[in-house]
Length: 239
Image (tube, rainbow, N blue to C red):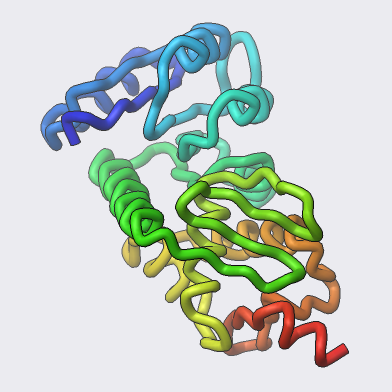
């Protein structure tokens, strides 16, 4: 954890201090903070971060706009921490590249749990990359070792969490998982989970795979049961 670089972005100094104190108690020592969007973007251009904690209501730019700008420079996991708690805000944050969403007021231990879950999944992903495993379905190919997804011969840009979700599906073809199970197994947290997070990431992944969102054939939804990944060569044969 000492080697994990974190950036916390919030215009409330008290919240930044609370996060920093809590993180240091959990042995996170490389912590940077920013109280404005401009300051955050400058830090991101100068340094590589493993986790970014991002508020939405910043003084100079919306956290949503900032997230879009951040994604031009890094795929580091972004956890939104905001007082805006509507479903629309959560859908927006996750839809533009956020990996998780926590509402204020928050329990600092919840933030720590989410961060540790993300780092745990990243370690699993790195171990898989070291094994040099690859998944080639003809229609698309996924290479965990280089974190690349190719669909119909074209590289597709994905966030780290989208790739983790895809990797999990590739490892478990034709298995059915509920949204709660996916959140626990991919996000690594079964206590503070938001099932909408899973739903949104699956929708984004379907779009990037070229899967019909109305009648999906690759990541299918079995109503009332869960989701199942059907390898494209099998899915296309069913057309």
